[in-house]
Image (cartoon, rainbow, N blue to C red):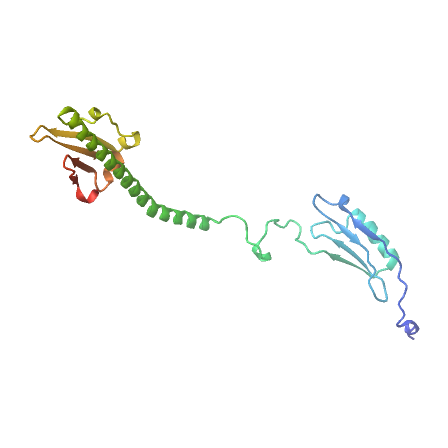
Length: 225
């Protein structure tokens, strides 16, 4: 005989089950244990105990709460775990959960080094060539200034100066580290001079290591001016 037939469709009054807040005091550092007893809808109340995955399931406090729950609702009790990583899992993000692993692998580091090496092999020679051309242009400007001073020296002294020092001009320190400047003169008639800039050090790798300018304005080599 079904004794529950007269009560079908009638919602039974369920016992009031208290909610327990976070039991962080009984957990390890950064571990949150939540015990919430919620009566489920239905003919019989149910008790759910929720914990984070890496916390002990039945601590002393949870055991007491478990016993209290059983006294209220009987044996119809369920324990569910909140979603989370298992005990001892690596806290770093992994590819399994849709995250990229932090840091570089050795292969990635090697690829980066190779790419940087290729770029350096292409860029450094071009940059060095650019610096040599800039130094040559600065030397040409100095030769032009020295030639102008030689013409003024001829007007004042009726002869050309035989050295750069006689013209009261000296090359800048950075230019003097790349070129040496000399003057060759001849009494004539007519008197002549040739100002020469000779590359030194790394500047000798330039395509025009020697440049000259004479009293007639002739510049050599022609392709370097």
